[in-house]
Image (cartoon, rainbow, N blue to C red; front, side):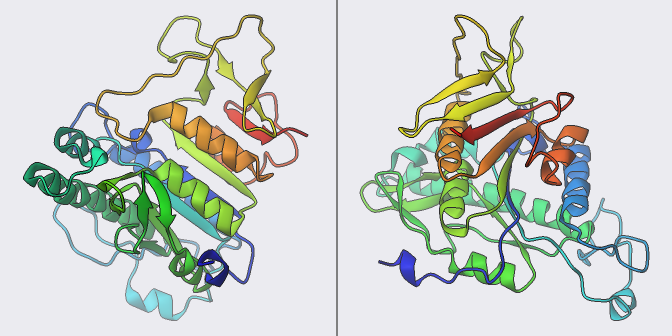
Length: 329
């Protein structure tokens, strides 16, 4: 089997993070990043990843490029010469596309395949330009916070699907990057498909594949809402589902809160080619079946920092807002 030959990290991975595209981009503004949120998320990731603080007492940025409208790096190269070896917990980041990529993919039908059609081929190129540009911006934001982040695209890593399911996805380069002290940053991507020519590989599916092979201690989904609700959270009387239990057959039920006649509704945005919240819960449930807890929480909040820092592993405090998905115990 191909998977048996794959390289695995020499030390355990602490956390795999799914950074929802809607959490760090402006939904209704084409290819627009929420800069303040992305900056806060990057700061929280640094705090959660840091095992020890540097002696200089300041963040040493790793984005040394000079771009219009972006503040210069907060350090000089000489600072690194005096810096002891950086010690980070082992994290992986996978981000969605938000207002990047989805529109190009839906308008051209990339997710339906058919690379022989000019529109689909052009859409494939346009989708990848969009999602890889977002990936670079996220890598830059992390690098400015001193996180040694490395962008890794599934297409460029040779990941392919068959009937929209992962057929070949070697995680060796991801594992080697982690062992070398980097934080891999992957993203939902347009990829080749053995049966229909091409499709969209969502970040949620990527998370599940990485989790199956790399076995992190826990997984955190950072979203634009407090967690999973019984209906769209913008509707009146929407209820936050605090704890979801996954059963052996893959089905799931709500443990907290205990409400009679609870019916969970799922909606998907018209331009979302990756399945929306329904896909997230399905993939999270498959991760939980591996015995790995999944936390779904609003990004850039005190609640997300607590989840990223591993505070919730043994006990979920009553004042924590989010959803935990666990295997039946």
